[in-house]
Image 1 (spheres, rainbow, N blue to C red):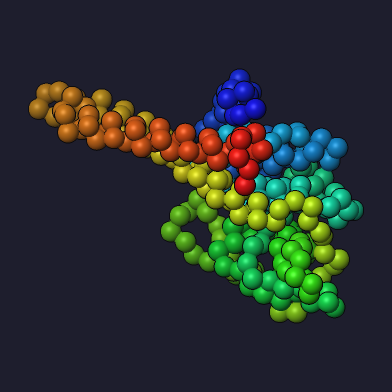
Image 2 (cartoon, rainbow, N blue to C red):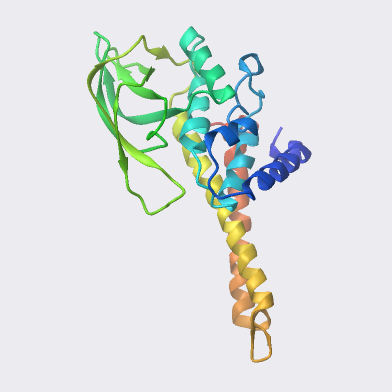
Length: 269
């Protein structure tokens, strides 16, 4: 199955997302939780919708289309993706339940972290999305055996980093021998979170590109010069046509990537 097999569901989800986002460019965590967005991929047993990344991608596109400032990338998309690839445990299950309920905001940290045999975590990561203000951090690390693990903690040092994009909040996260709880083991591919992050940003960018194309065409139809709409001039029409081709190609590529991450396509990541 591919994303096109769920077109009606996605259209409904897109319409609801557009309605929520029309009320303001800044969307807080509780609003996204109440809309059911943060728990889309959380299994139903833990209070989520049991959906897939394909449904999450619809929300990401609408967030990009609205240029919305949210914590969705780091605190929902990445975190739930990681938790779903971990072995069952009390810590993992409680985190899924709390995220789906919107009571806990957990940011995922990907960087250069090591977990010593005595349970002490050391390392650093820059430009971590949505770590600043998160209730807990889910850190991907390499343990003393060389295996990839994840640890949940709220004891690390988080320093906000300034960026030009006002829709993003990023931070530096550091640990200097911090004692953490028992590590969570992966049953899936740890690298999948990197692919998920890249496709999520692509979805956001696609939504923004489509919004900019629509705004440009609308302006070209209403702005007049020399007594007629500027959209009637060949130079403007050709530029708009080039934008449409570029966005159409991008949409096809992003759809393939979404299907791969969601496990619905013929290729996996």
